[in-house]
Image (cartoon, rainbow, N blue to C red; front, side):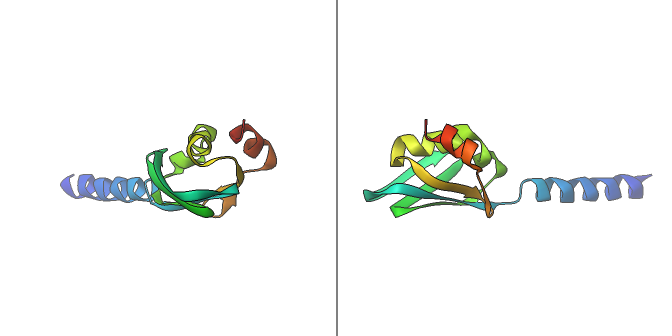
Length: 98
């Protein structure tokens, strides 16, 4: 019984670790920022320089349009927005920039 409980705990811990794994979020701004920008959005620390913004580590929470909008408020409209290489489709990108 104890061995089964420990095995179950190990499996659940591994699954939780995978679900919370850190990824990389990136955005390309439509216009470069005149000076470096740092902000927190979606529990991630964003850094922008020129027309490039990045957040690492970042969780899947940054995939929300509201997080993209928070970045837009600070750094300006984005030309692209992605998490772990998966880009926002055009409809979500348009909502982000509203």
